[in-house]
Amino acid sequence: LSVYLGEFFEVHLFVNGTVLQGDQSRVSMPYASKGLYLETEAGYYKLSSEAYGFVARIDGNG
Image (cartoon, rainbow, N blue to C red; front, top):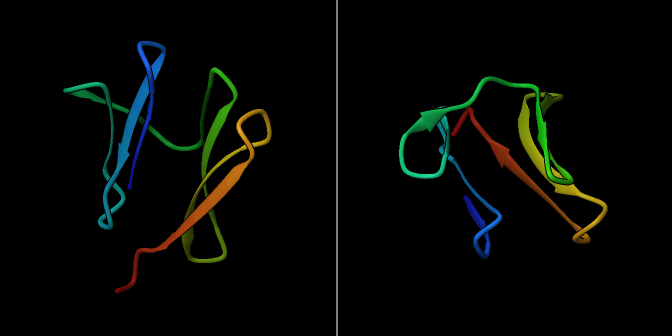
């Protein structure tokens, strides 16, 4: 799952739980920046933003 908000923010969430910001910066969870929130919830990885109006959940168990 990738989220790109112009020049302000870029994050990539992979099924194995790896999170990258931009091209290479690894991110630890939970994470919050510029109105985006990344966390684990009931066996899922959750990326959400009230400011941008979306919620995405990824099942990391396959």
